[in-house]
Length: 317
Image (tube, rainbow, N blue to C red; front, side):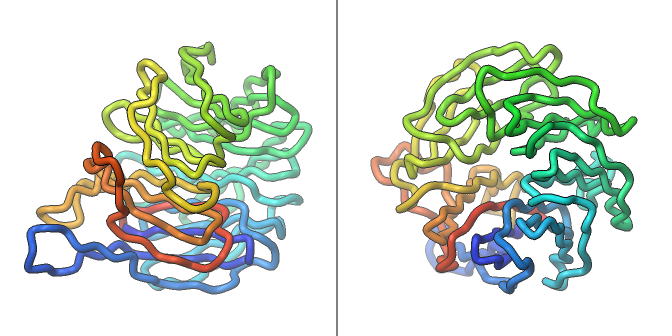
């Protein structure tokens, strides 16, 4: 597993999760630094990773591409005219290690579609009158959802390269993410809503303690959120109720969450039970979700970048 984080100080960070040999029965894990260097000329706003490839989007209107196998930058994409606020790779089920497309969105209100092998710009789609806050690609890869600062939700047909639907929301949403083919989630400040993917109708609605900044979908019908309350909260996606919470997961707000979906790193450690979190305090932590029943949950591993982290992504290869 490789984790990639971006920071306000323009640095890109890469870590690999390693299992240490130990005489005890407990797993000993470390986040081993792979690379760290200033890749942008302005703060990094978004990151994405899939297989051996990672990408970062910055306030310098540029997307940087990285080869995780060699820990090197391999190119730049300059097709936006605003800060790149959201990135997502689409990977087919037949080639799960290699991404097929890269989708990006920016403050210019546009969504860009790229072929990922090689990285070639295919289409620019105007989706919002103001900047795009976030995007989510459907598991089929045929469409994407975007939310923008014009308080609208838009749907983009990625096959035809055009916006197919747009509606105005009652309040501006900052995060959107698919939980499955049939459900997606939106965040508007401290409010979290689950929607039917077919007609966008609200299935349930709940309110967190403070503003939610990031979400990640887990197994067993759980949704994880992090934000201004410094906690990592697990929600039951069926009822919209809190399943459990990792209180004071960080000393400041949580800016990124990644569910580790690889089945195992070795024969004994199940990565599907782990969640990575990043905070503006500069710390990346790994949590064993099987230990959440304890009064105080301690991280399995952590690393302090000593920078203001803004985003986090993970790849299983």
